[in-house]
Image (cartoon, rainbow over the protein chains, first blue to last red):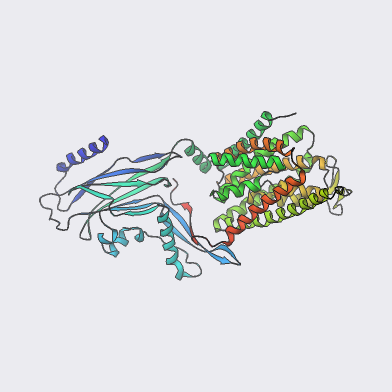
Amino acid sequence: MTRLLLVVAALLAALPALSPARAETMITSLSTHRLQITSNFTGSEIVLFGAIERDAQTISRPGGYDMAVIVRGPRALMVTRQKTRVFGIWVNTDAREFVEVPSFYALLSNKPAADLADIELRARQQIGVDSITAITPRLGTNPGATPTFREALLRINRAKGLYRENPTGVTFLTPNLFRANIPVVPNTPVGSFDVDIFLMSGGVILARESTNFEVTKTGFEAFVANAARDNGVLYGLAAAMLALFTGWAASVVFRRD
Amino acid sequence: MLLILGMGLAIGFISGMFGVGGGFLLTPLLIFIGIPPAIAVASVSGQIAASSLSGTLSYWRKNAVDPKLVGVLLIGSAVGTATGVAAFAYLRREGQLDLFIALSYVTLLSGIGLLMVIESGRAIARSRSGEPPKLPPARDRRVGTGLPFVMHFPRSRITVSALPIIAIGLGIGFLGSIMGIGGGFLLVPALVYLLRVSTAVVIGTSSLQTLVTMLMAVVFHAVTNGSVDVVLALLLMIGGVVGAQFGARTSLAMKGEELRLLLGLVVLAVGMRFLIDLVVRPDDPFSNTVMEWAVRV
């Protein structure tokens, strides 16, 4: 908590030092840029603090400010498959590949996504789960079904907690000072997370800031996961040696003759 | 974690009791508790290697292994394992791996389970009616000598063409690496009934063959699919080798036919469970899989 207060103090101190500007600017800070997780990780939060800076020339915003904070995990190629019944059993019969989709997505805002801006702006800036860009390079045998696959992709990731929207995720502490709690879910992907912060008013983007943080595995699991990925041959041989050792140890311990 | 250790113990107990590797029960159980089939299959290979080594060592000391026969079997099973792992990777990419594993288990387990139940049921009925147990048929120890590459195996007391042996190795290696089974419960009958290998060396020979095949499978899976979970494998190994000791002791107190009937029923039940999962309408016909990361993390 002291750390957060320090961040706030630093932000406030920085405010008057900035050069005068017509439009608003933002200063933001994350409570951490590197989160290390272990195998018993049960979820956590990273706090984003921000201040909106305005000067004498800045016009007043009668509608007040809106904030949209978008957090995106490392992107991946995802495949959504559909099962249908073939000769009485359920078989994956159709699939769509989605390229470069975020493995994690969270929208934190001070009001529901639909009230932030019109659908075109939301689609352009990927504000809201339904606006996540998911491109399918190959349409398969029936291109008409692709929207169903896209919906399924979003729905399943939503159910897993990997795609989420929180319309009360941004709190204004004062009219110009805000805070957002970025959730890091228990089943979080690891890698670099991009944070895009949009300052909006009346459906228009006034200012935009970007930052990022990293989620890494630590401890024995990290060592094993890295070894499995980078040195497959050595890892395989090590696993084989382990098997031989365990088997030999057992035959020594339990030898009956 | 304790659950997995416990499962390793339970399966080890069963494998010691019935003298089988246990992979054909362990892999399904892991799949049923929600471990992805790809990880389950690859990691169980390590466990099977560990438990077959302790078996092999004790048979080796009793001189009950035919290394020459294993050598010829391995020619087939090396190719079979490599092909199996490659097929595994292909099916996984196509999204049909889970289906293939489930279908293989349904076919294999219900077939084997049914045979075991029928055979042991008959044996029990025979012993109740007081008939003497059937003697094993007189052995013709020359098999397939019409084929080329005829070899003599003094330990197993057979003279046989190398081709059927390699074919058996090929099949066991392929199935073993895709299904996560050692294949002992297929190999032993094949050696006894098809090749007429002397029963004195059949189990030891099968153990050694399983050991080498599963070691290859672990390495191939790690290299090709990166799907070996060494922590999971270690837990299974520890549970397995300890459980097997208690299982072996318990089995001495039970009758062979009853044991086989029990095992047959367990095998049938696991096969049915796979069938039910295939037939019942899934909660959600759609599923997501992360295929590859855009950036290496």
